[in-house]
Length: 383
Ligand SMILES: Cc1ncc(COP(=O)(O)O)c(C=O)c1O
Image 1 (cartoon, rainbow, N blue to C red):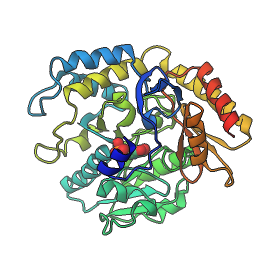
Image 2: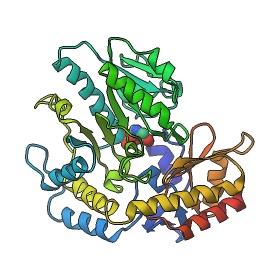
Image 3: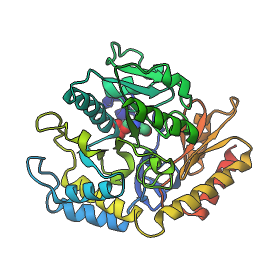
Image 4: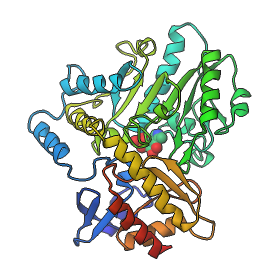
């Protein structure tokens, strides 16, 4: 099978040679029946774990009725999910797509269109070093990491890169053309780097003062990952637009942006669209996910287990950082995070890596303290 994979698939992923067959809760099982504790959850996607009874049932039932119908018609669960997202955020309206990159692409287009409609020539977006916003041409340009740009020039016009957590660096980039800032409040791929509260407050005030839109990439941090429904709720701010994906469908591909009403109205018919965006299957899944995450005690558990995970990981003596169940451990140069990931896999533990040399823990949000103990025990053996 590996030979066929090499022969028939693009070789654009650095894959590990494992074939998983099924999952249950926080565990995956490979084709030989070997069990693995999953602290990566499909890169911060499977927030309800595997084979969650309500999610599986809802998807199966919906598949037997309608999977997809297009946005030429109304889709009941799409409206219901939009209502939940709007009522549990800053109000506003919701547009659905299929992935994080698409959500950010929609966000970028909406920013431009909003200022176009206002008759203002503002289109520049400031993003941050170490960020990750996706792989389409505009979102990879927004991603302020040169390694993702190599070979893809010319990039899209209108992006500037500031230093993360450095307000002066943002100030120095602002011109009369600055339309928005786009920020991850905890940088994910960049190495699990939380933003400073003071920096965000200053940045927010600066944006308000200059009429710059404050937009937040919550593709990874959104839907309970950091212990609140949205990471921005940890900060004393109200964004103009947020983008979502990953956890929103619990594994079913879906992306979305929520935008304030006066901004959302710039997407009039014909300006932006998605064939699959918000179809029956994905929004039925998102509805179950949101109902679970918003159910009594769910987010409190995320915070509690997240704290427990952070505390437990301190035993190794390396810097531990993150928010909720988005946690990173910075390893010293002589221990390769990739190698630790490889060795952990052999011992039945699935971890991730991020940034320069950070171990990344983004488990299903249903994880328990007991499972955290198991992960730490295996990691101890590996390290
Ligand atoms: C913060 C952030 N934005 C955008 C993306 C891109 O999402 P997708 O891979 O679904 O296009 C990612 C993916 O890792 C992400 O972490």
